[in-house]
Length: 187
Image (spheres, rainbow, N blue to C red):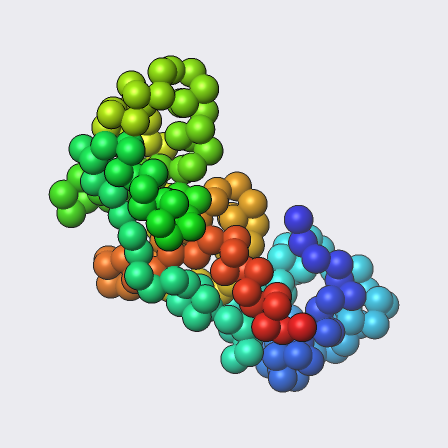
């Protein structure tokens, strides 16, 4: 879903773009952009899509990237570790999730809620002595560390964390608590 057309002018000005530059980038004339912004022209969906795609592609210098908010030290567990050891790590550091590795390969994730669910289904000793790989969830999404924070917010509504990467190497982890830190800093 695209933002309302009234956002075009606000975003263009915020980015310091002239109507001429925007028009050149989206394949129209400056007067068409002006008419769209003033509500005198009802553009096609295709035109609106091109305008917002271009505006979204420009990164505001003040907009934060996930590398700016990520926790750099990423704690992990191995797939063959005992669940009890993973719980100790979660509790020791106050985490709600841990990425899971098999050697040097990222293979999944272990969430606090998953452990809780398993403990409700089976005898605790059986779960605690079991391997992380027996109950782990799918891998946490991995995004380039240059990804804008605004693009990560919707993703963090679906998953509890994302990993950040640069040149194929994991560089950090971002959770909802990292987003809350931004909100507190800006207030």
